[in-house]
Every structure is written in structure tokens, then in C-alpha cells.
Image (tube, rainbow, N blue to C red; front, side, top):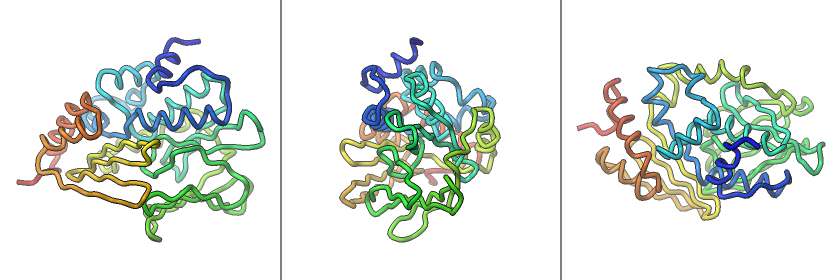
Length: 278
């Protein structure tokens, strides 16, 4: 076994086990709790490196987390988690819902006819794998938010729909569970995410999911938001980058990530986006 696999499991506080549905669920929930969805490093490094380099490999991904509490966006989070699952003998394929997101299709180790949708790189409150049955599949609602998958008529094809209080949050994504891709095939979408007008180069975002507490913590630009499964939503407007750094360090428990946050705020200001206007 490669040494990075043991390091990865150590970060997740998981032991080495044989592939199973239970193990897949444990790994996914642990990954969501440990690695934040954040774009600070992407913002500050994008002008200097190629997207291919930023996606990195498991060793680079783990080292960045150890030294800077780094996580990533959908590409790096799901690509590296997929590599871990492969190393643990799960059967894994990558898909591209909507043509720009990245998620995983994992074959059920206990029944190869069952496929699981796995996503550790989304803002949607998905805390466990989702199985496909050919019918509509609903993810348990969270704080008024709902995710569901609708079959489109073609075998294995689904529409991913995310809504809150009955309103569509983003455009409908379509994908086929059979249209899995290799890493190289995902690179055009990854490179597009580094376009100057791409979403995650024009906002600050850090999200931590806490599955066991049924809670999501989100810092978006100058807002800090706490959402709970019971439907509570608490919002606080941040007044300065120093207050934002304190939220990252103390409330989101990612103290090593705070310097990257401060750099990202300065980077955006230099590019004409002032998070904290005077």
C-alpha cells in the first residue's frame, strides 16, 4: 500500500477496511468533516500556476491540508477522494454533471448492479452516498434545501436538481451514471474554472460540513452563515478581514487556513473586488 493512503486515512481518522457500503459512507462523512470546500488557495495561486498543477495529487493535497488546512473545490476534492477510494479497492468513475462540476460514481461492493453518487465537493448538503434505482431519488432535506435526481428517460441518465423553499438554486445538471471519465477528460472543465470570470475567482468561499452535528458553516464574502438540519439559519455580517480570519480560525476550526484567507482578500482587492468596502 502506498504511504499516502495511510496518511489520508489518518487525516480522516479511519482504519483500513475492506470495501463495503458502510465503509464508503464512513469515508465520505469523514472527508466532508475534515477537508473544507474553499477557494482561497485557488484565488491566490491561479495567476501563477496551471490548473493541472493546482489539482495536484494525493501527496500534494494532503501536504497542503497538513500545513495550511487547505481543502479545495469540486475538482481537487472529488479527484483526490476518488483516488483514495480506488486505492482502497472501490470501483470508481468520475462524472461531470452539467459539464463543469465533478462528482464520483462508485459501484456498490456488495451488489455490482447498484451505483452510488458520491460528492465531497459541493455546496449542497449531501452527507452520504446516493443510490440510483431508475426512479426519482431524493436526498433528505436540510434547512429547507432539497436535492433530488430525476430520470430523464434515457437509461442511466438523470437530472440533478437543487432547490430551497421551492425555488431552484442553480440550473439543472444532467449526467449519465454510465458516462464515467478519466482525469484527462475532466481537465477542460477544470481549466474553465480558472477563467477570470469563473464563479470561484470572483467570490470568497469557505464551507465546512459537520455531518455528525447536522450543521453547515459557510463564509461567503463578508457573510458568515450557520445552517442546521432543524431549519435554523443564522447570518452575521463581517466588518473586516481580521474578523473574517478570526471566524476561519476559531469558529470553523481552520486556524492554518486564515493566512490564505487574508491573502485571498488582498488578491481580490487588487483585482477590483473589495469585500469590505470602506
